[in-house]
Length: 117
Length: 111
Picture 1: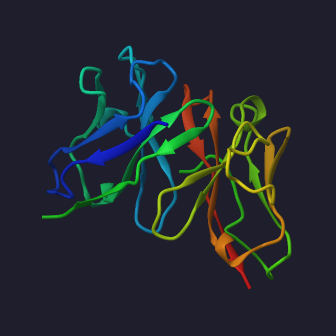
Picture 2 (picture 1 turned 120 degrees about the vertical axis):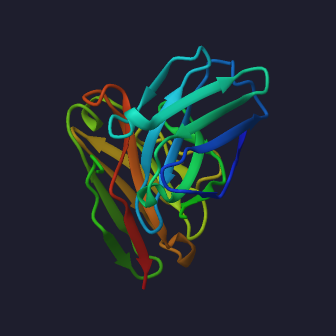
């Protein structure tokens, strides 16, 4: 079955851009079965949906983050990526890549990104 | 800024039953399937219930889901210490132009 794995820096300086990549295995990102998405969870807090990309390249973002978020897909590498610009300490969180249909499954294991100088 | 409202915590003794409510609106729960996710301490959330009341393979029938109008409910019977976790509901929301929204989360404690 499909498995997801996040990768990227665990520490980002304030005002810089957070960049993460999700590698999809066990299935093709071009299958059209899912919306490939990012979700984050600040320490001790709840879940926040960031946005999604379809294999065709169409995207939709959380309105509260829209001005700072870009999600892209590389079908040749079976990967999709997240860029979040102008980060602050409030962006410190565990970031999960996930596959969404009418439900979210599977989830990546998550990666902690800390924003600090 | 969760759109769906859950109780912060519920608790019961081993073997007992707990229910967790998830309240939303016509733009989310009222017109979309609801899912439930279990997050054990230090781990990623895991799908527990999908399409309101279906259980993925491997999820015991102690876990059940239901939906009525703009609310959904997760039930856990025969409570076990291993059920101590945070539980979240989730669904699509059409008022936010196809955003996926989560509940505020509920901590289940086994006394």
